[in-house]
Image (tube, rainbow, N blue to C red):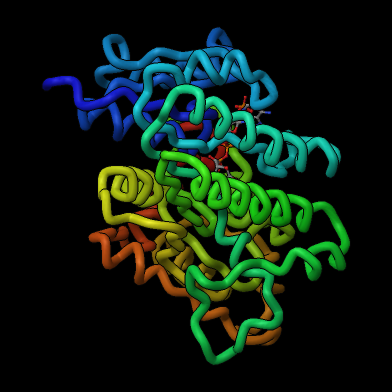
Length: 329
Ligand SMILES: NC(=O)c1ccc[n+]([C@@H]2O[C@H](COP(=O)([O-])OP(=O)(O)OC[C@H]3O[C@@H](n4cnc5c(N)ncnc54)[C@H](OP(=O)(O)O)[C@@H]3O)[C@@H](O)[C@H]2O)c1
């Protein structure tokens, strides 16, 4: 296959980025992937991807390391900015560190893009940058015009609002930057992203699903679930990159359901699996209000399609079993 283009993926060893790198390599791209430590065995899965030996080069770069980012981005016509710390059991950053990594990191990536005269930048934001807006009319589906309200986020307690704030501000920064640069910036806003993993480590949302299945209802998965398959997110990122008509923000959500429905689905799909007692504690549907109405129509109008939820669940369960995180039946 002839070389298509050279592109950079930041944080390429992460869950979403690994599927993106796999897809880019299979579509003939040459990929510069940034990782914090190319020798860490947790990044070995990247080296085993088809075409990786020839077309994947890993660069050591923290989000604070302009020189590292700049050498990875140099010579690339496109950049996918995926790296960002995601709060999880193993990711114990202070609020300030989290905000700094997301914001300073994004600024440094964009500066390096300016220097390298990159033509297109795709930034992974989050549905969280849309969601937290109490002023949005209840009867109107949330679309790309809706932004999380930063004042409202400041009023919320706990760690999670800082992540949401960080994603909202970094997305705004990227879209503002595109107004004064020659590069197009498109942002993709995935909902909670689950599905099979290419990497051996457990990222935050996969851990959330695993805890949910194993019985920790205190997982990332709350009463109302907004889910998308990691492979469909990777498809969305490539789709908006390759489509010259793609502009602005794209919500990327496939399935909106109550956790009671997920429990029902799991029980139907795996009648022989023992599910935790905590499943019966899960609240009745809609007790705490209606699901938010969310629209991924803009992305679907570009041709985006998504998998059925059953396929995502089944492939996630197999992935947990293979990793020894769930017992095989
Ligand atoms: N998973 C979801 O449900 C979800 C939903 C919406 C949006 N997102 C966004 O999607 C992106 C990827 O998330 P993911 O779910 O794939 O999580 P992940 O597997 O934890 O990936 C995060 C990546 O960011 C890298 N990273 C974190 N801090 C860094 C720093 N200071 N310098 C350089 N790299 C750094 C990590 O590198 P290390 O491996 O070295 O830690 C890792 O490669 C993030 O931007 C996240 O906000 C995720």
